[in-house]
Image 1 (cartoon, one colour):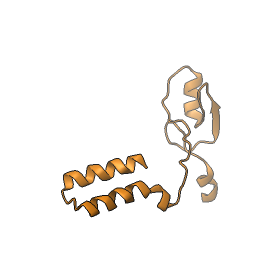
Image 2: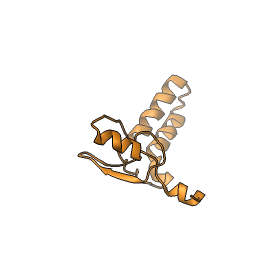
Image 3: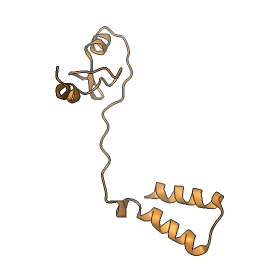
Length: 96
């Protein structure tokens, strides 16, 4: 198998090995290797990460606008204590 063909194969959602099969479950359609599929079919349990939805990509100006506003306010107010700066910026980042 060539390197480019290996890169296209997604890893097994359970064990991480290269996988090429898709198993339809009640909850998710996940990619599993043959070993994990046979374990599921024999009644054994496996754990896996379901497919994740990609996060929307916004321009940095929009993504960090709340964080930038908070930093500007802290600078304008002359806040220099680290125990106030870090929590404030972390909170502003979570809001954005």
